[in-house]
Image 1 (cartoon, helix red, strand yellow):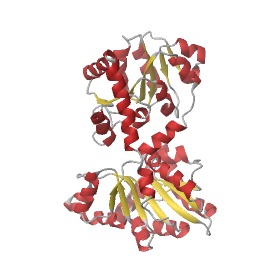
Image 2 (spheres, one colour):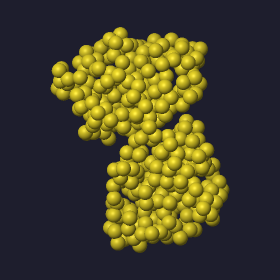
Image 3 (tube, helix red, strand yellow):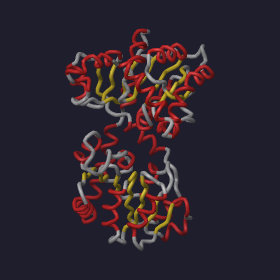
Image 4 (spheres, helix red, strand yellow):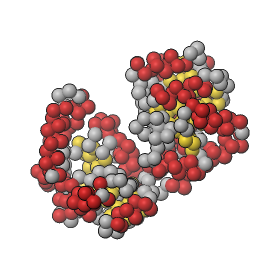
Length: 406
């Protein structure tokens, strides 16, 4: 049944690639993967394989990749992606020796792939459970680790009808999970080589903080004022934020929307009314200093922008799910976010620590902001709580490396 699904997926990708540019890039990358491996693989080298579905999973695995590269330079790194949103952004990442798409998980693809690269060990980040790759790795005696994984009762592995597919989990040598619940769930299906180490994303945001960019335009814009940063925002987020802050001229606003197409940027501009607004790519330091609102119409700066803020809002909570809260919290910003956050342990953790605030609508947003602005002590306490939470949750990378055999 599984292999039939894989072949159907392969056919679906071929069909959808005719109409969708993203899928077309993915299909092209998968078909070229074996050529990339033949060209770049050194048959005398020892490879460690890291696989990440997309960009978010890559960021979770990145601290581990870079620590292994630093401590064990005798190994080469192979990095694979399933999604174009990961590969296209990180295809030139200098921390890996070979970067490519992962071919669809058919038996022939898995055999051919592993015959070419012959990894010494493999790391699958968070949610990747490819049946054929994993079974062949186990058959060959290759250690395989699941890193930053998290399990929930509703997943197929823990349903009566999912017992057969659940056997794929027994291909892993060890699980490094984020929480105790995951360990207990795995134990119920007979998987006991499980260590609770936390989430490597905490290590990653601390790394990012250390290498953050200086941003002269953002610095000129802030210029000693109070700054509210809305990161990865969507229209429902922006409607709430701007309804409140359009009446607060004592605060400056940085909006870094998730979508930066002209249609969405025009929607934001219409919400702003007469507030003096500049776009990051179209302004200079002098104009930014005099503006009240700065719209960041490019990518790659948000993690460094947060350091110029006093309070943050992270978008997505009124849609598919919240974006990266930790990038803001690591700078000691109280973080506000919408209600769709149940799948994100850090949201619950920040709320419990006192550094995060969940909102449901405009009224709850206004109440939260009013509370933070009315009491400087409360604002400072929330800021410190957010920073402390990230620091206390770090260290997963070290725990993983101390429990594998290199």
